[in-house]
Image (cartoon, rainbow over all chains, first blue to last red; front, side, top):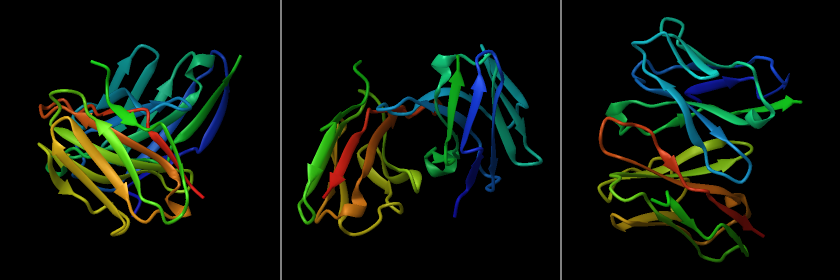
Length: 113
Length: 114
C-alpha cells in the first residue's frame, strides 16, 4: 500500500522558473512531513519539513504548502537554479511509529540554464 | 562528525553468495534505519532499531535478509543467499532520540548481484 503518492515523476523547468511537486497521503496519523533532496550518488538529505499545525513554511527559495483537510502537501522551488537539479522526495512519519519515514516515489527535477 | 558511514560503497557479487553491508551511525543517535532504493519501488524501509533493539522489521522482504546492531556504533544488513532481484542501493540512516526527527542518510551501498 503506497501511503504517500508523489507527482509528477519528472519535470523540466527553465532557470528562474518555479518548480512545483505535489504529494498526497492517506494516514491521518502522520504528524511530520519532510522533503528530501537527493543528488546522484548521494544519500537523501533533509531540505525542509512541516508539521500539520502549520499551513505554510518557507526557507529561502523553498516553500512547503500544507492542506490538512485535503491530505495534500506540496513543495515550491522559486527562482529555480541549475544546482537545484536533483531528485526530490516527499515523506511522512508519525511519532507513534518511531518517526520512520514513508517516502513518496520521487520527482526528478531538471533545471535548464 | 563524519556523518553516517556505510561500507562498502559498491559491491558486486554472484547469485547465491552472502553479502554483508555495514553502517556506522552518527554518534549519539538513538535510531538507525535501513532503506533500500530501486527504480521500481523507490525508497523502502527495511528495518529500524531504537537503542540497538530492532523495533520494526516488517519491511524485510524475506528470511534471506537479516540485520543486527550489536552496539550503538555499528549495524549490519546481511543477505544470504543473494539473488539478482536484491540489486539496489541500500541506505543506512540515523537520527537522534529527541523530538528532532531529521534522519541523516549515509551515501549508500550499491549492490549488484549477477
